[in-house]
Length: 195
Image 1 (cartoon, helix red, strand yellow):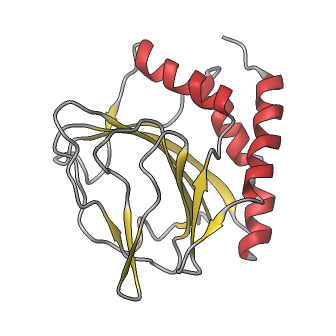
Image 2: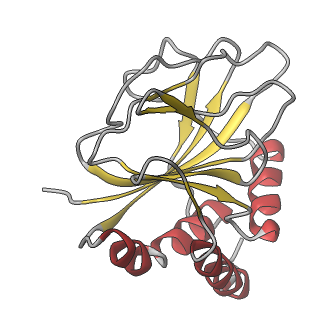
């Protein structure tokens, strides 16, 4: 399938505009996102995940937690999404006063029983991270952040999520495992320095 450059351009503009509207939190290193990705791109991505034969792989160090991942499929909506997020690098660098490069994205498929305990940094290579939920449920499966004895969380709804300065190490976790009747799909994008 050829890439849809019109959708990439529209989606880059859309997310760039959304960066101006992000919700700050009580934590200066954490921002909540709502409708961050162009709805047409989110719908195309979710449709792809639900209808295509995809070779999911186990997430490193999470093989016992029921998390699968998908990193790259060329000439697909995965590449289109990757390009849109890469196009936001300069704006994110300006916001955080950094000189990061886009490291890529993972699509996570968290299945029954998946949860993760309190941890600070996702990976020392990751400086800035965005997680956007691609699915939603009446059960709150959003990541929780702990800051100054407060628990901060965005809505667990499609196209909501967070932007975090991972270099600071804001403690975060899930407090509810994924139930049997649900799959927690999300997009996780990373900016940082390699080597």
